[in-house]
Image (tube, rainbow, N blue to C red; front, side):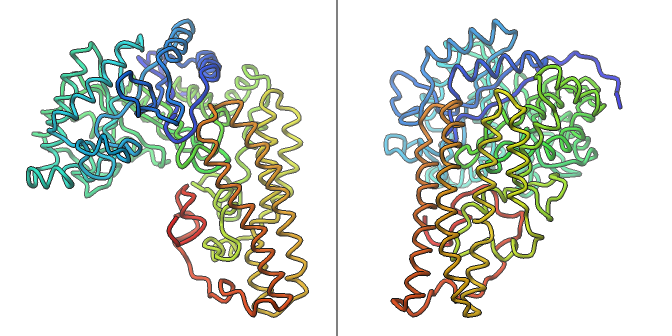
Length: 537
């Protein structure tokens, strides 16, 4: 299917998030820019929040691999040579989750990770951020963030000034920051969700949402509003949300998602399903500015390169090309590998609850970290059909041999599937054997725990190869701690079983528990601490 669409996008870009542990190496950013350029992208937003080094703000990027001025200049110059605009994507209201930990910034924190509005020191800091962007990026564009500031005005601001209408606060702060940006010759855009959340009881995308006219009129005229949505395959929803954005009378951006932030495996199939619906309405509404985001939630487990099929296909959708065979053929010609083969990276999340890989699913991560004795995910996992992880591993191995430079991605997920082949269901087997008094089976399971730990070592090594080839070393420590903790726990569970079988201990209290539904299968967002225990982490 081909829809009439002119190639007249003002900005068609991607966004790489470098603020959740994984900071892409400058040389890899350049490689990614080269790929984006070859696919017809002309912009890359670098999601850096506070991950850049300001001379007199030593905690910016501290111990997390923040980019230096020299690194940004290097990436910026390369991008320009490829016809790609490198744009800073920072924050000027919320998402300061690292800075709020530091006492030196306590007097400009409102609540959660939100800056204190109306505080002079807040604007002194923002001025430094804007100055840095203007001096070190050749682009005059800047993404000021502004998203998910749910509790703005409800913390220190409330204590100092009393309750103020949050629309009033947002508009006042936004106008102040946009005025500052204008002083540096910067043209800002922001994520638009806070305007809608305050009008829609905390929800963002929805039908029938309208923004008060007196609010829309006060939005700075030089500001672009970016509607982000990675969650829906409903064309009607996109249509209504674009109409709601049009009511502002301001420049509109749209941000879709190439899902690489829900565990170790990408969600290309789901991304394509959602992107097709979104891009049809982008075309319908004549939206001229598009971003495809690649977030890195909860530690950055998944390679950004794993979503190349999505990035390629979405660019084709934007041209009105929805012909699947044509898209696959073009991908193969550009990358020298099969589109379908590349999509195999999705399969670690394939199960009877997600048979077509079209749903949000993080099972490849949640079942890795799901504790063998506590088993928060066991209730739901045992109600699924058996997941053939060993078969998945074999498929990934076979396909990986054909993938050239991208083979390392397939090696990594094949190793993960080999761990899950034992690890995913071992807690369920252990509990059943324990409750039925089957000590012979418990004894055999001890060997499985040790084998899972050995396979985990292989997975750790392949994940390390992915990380160190693509990212700065900062943030890898968290992967080491998580995987090392899992390995220690596997050995400890094996030891606990052996102590029980030998009579050294009379029971295993965790296995005496009756397992309850803890959320539902798809409700466990990509959050490590939510998979392993209800205890404090």
